[in-house]
Image 1: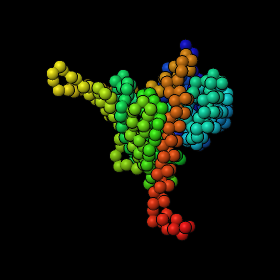
Image 2: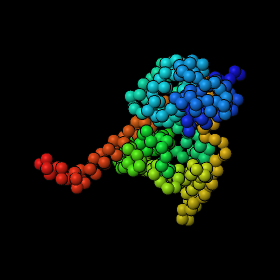
Image 3: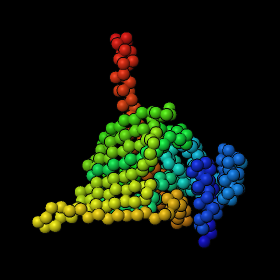
Image 4: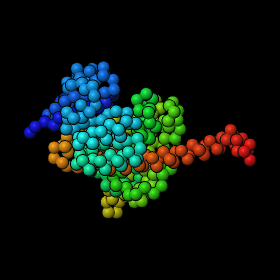
Length: 329
């Protein structure tokens, strides 16, 4: 079977790994790379092969499928140029910086008959693949995603940078329509919100509590799901999960059966790219579609709006805010 001609746009922290894997996957032929920094592109090409393109459109015209790993604020512009030329696209999360942009990309992909996949890689974490069959009707979901501060990703707030991973995962469990969002968050080391907590009530009765921080001393990526008859705890970092099931013997108190799950050593990004290329080859729907990416972005904006309200209330309650209101009165 002919290999799919692939390319990578943006070969920074994430994009370099797209290039590495496209060069290694048997179903892919890495044609080339483009980056705003030509020297960076040349460095990655020396490591993994492929041509360095000096013009973006030349790369797009030379490939069938492409990964877009540029900063979030450029996702829409670059992805649109690819789709306009009929190219299949895997765009890193979030799908775009604005909802209108995300919806336009989904519309354009459908119009051009292109695969549009969004890089919510946690869906492909081997421990999640092992745990997912045990999750079917969550009543309460708790997510913690904490990391130390770094310059990468600070062009957006922590909701679009980190929390959106968990927002996508929660939505993938089909909890029903969003009924209420309450959230709090503050900037700490950047001009955007760096730590946030959200409580989301869904129409199906499920409640999700999410905490994300990029100003923490310790790293943590955990998911806990509570259902009527079981509790599932997933540690994305260690790739270990535990499933506790309620067992009721006749005439006895409820007991818990425990099952431990261990994810494989497979690289989530590799599994993600293989899934994308399979969709390109077969025409099957993307594992994480543009519509799913847009839904996660829409919920992220609801969280952001709730945090904006929280910050306004804080400002109004501060001594300086009270003084201002008194002067205005």
